[in-house]
Length: 55
Ligand SMILES: [Zn+2]
Image (tube, rainbow, N blue to C red; front, side, top):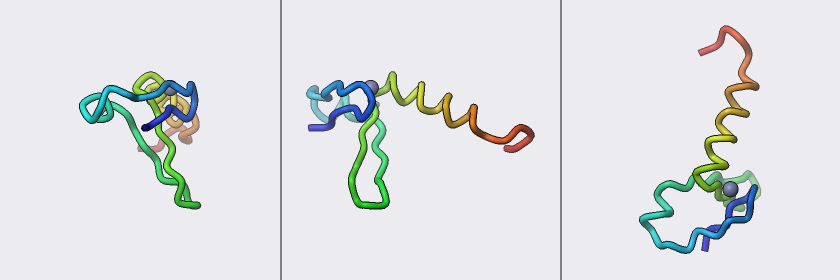
């Protein structure tokens, strides 16, 4: 059962809910899940870290 890596919410509603979750595979083979809320926060973090003028 996927568990959010950040807030530890458990995705227990089956595959339909899992579609809105994001998973990232780490170099060591572990899979990290992010719930939709944390995904949005995570994306903002990534965008904030992008160098200005890129993209
Ligand atoms: Zn979360």
